[in-house]
Image (cartoon, rainbow, N blue to C red; front, side):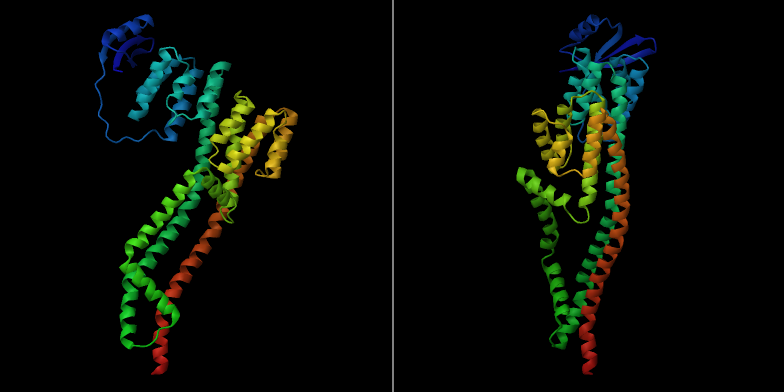
Length: 396
């Protein structure tokens, strides 16, 4: 549908906004029916966009925080959306906000207009907005959403930061090993082959590896890509996704960190939803689908079935065996005292700190492990190359 730009007067001065209509006359009719005293209406020129990335989570957080401030100050919803669209630095996001505003102007609820853009506003976001609209506390809900997303971003950032150092070390180790195998080992191989003597097995292994890398380099470099594609294909299947997630959460080094992150996300999401007035079953459904861990998702869905049969939350969670005993006990206390949302948020705060500790511990543990691994590999290559030289020296 064509988009039209119009200018109208407000107490704050001239404002520019957009709406969708079949024609210019239809756009003017819509504005007149909405009692908007427009100064001018004209068709918006079409933009040709070849490559444009969607808004980041940070963009959505800023949008939510600014929206909460404007709603709290008493500005009308449509005016807030107009100001936010005009002030957005991301053109694609600005178009999305304008589309949301036009749908709200045409009579849709704010939550339903957000649901038209699931790639930006997920189910958790839209359900909380719906609860805020129904309860008349949209400004408070927006603040909670902004707080929730900021904490989720911080948690995700901590985990990513923990992976940077190991990734750098592994990359350096891989580069050093490839350099040795391609440029250094062949020179030793030619020298040893001219001697015409049997090579020690470590030397034969290293020279054989060098020949493979040089002659079949495309297989060596395509193998990691193939493994990644295979894992990706397996995770697309239901059983494969469950299997790989179970392996991750039980992994000896990264497993505890993954579990802590999952618990923090589950409790933070549930606490935010319950405190916003979302029913507990709806909250569990949303939390399960946004958990990111198939093991957690299946456990929470089983808990929903138990709750529908009249059971509480803590006992079914305990039976699943996925969540730590302390978490289940604190949830049980929250149920008994009627402060489940506060207890969930306290658990999330605690596990945020646990993630910090786990990340620091993981980094300090991986650093010497990776250095030892690099030293052993390079040392093995050096010793393998010098073993024939030592044997030749003994013969002389």
